[in-house]
Length: 189
Image 1 (spheres, one colour):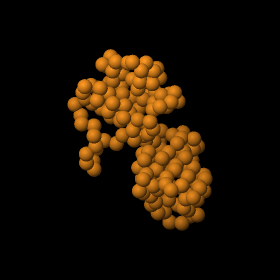
Image 2: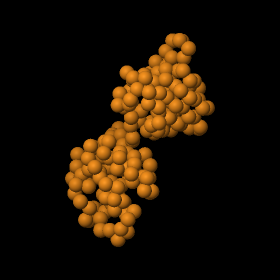
Image 3: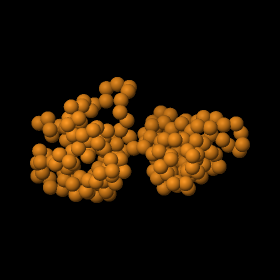
Image 4: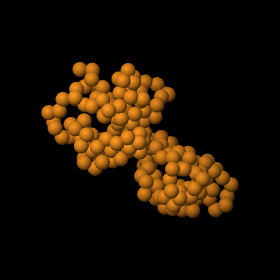
């Protein structure tokens, strides 16, 4: 049935936007929080668990509320459920909507810590200083060093991260790319 297929696509895209599969009670809490952050609309953990089939294994997908479908569709980048249903959500070319978690620097509080990781085993903790400026606080297996500063306005989970005007020990600023091949993951501290 096409509706069941679209429900499955909606679940997959929501997990892609969230950056993780939704399988545990904590995953549903995180999803509920992220939906609110992104859409300013609430979906309860119990509603999400029902839609994912985590509870009520005998559910009838055709009975999902339109409001639930609209909010989830907005979470993954569509205006509403009807728009999502008309779209071909399979990515086919090099351009298109970005469905990854993201972080805008100016939405962070001054002093906030963010942990960045990328392959093969890089781990860097940065502190937000304001005005899109960050300072490296800790660096494990990375060329970045504590005390390095750089500008960055936007971090997209799973994408390469460009550090603008990286300064070390008063040297001339350079641009630097982290996670060039497989992208960078972030966690707010």
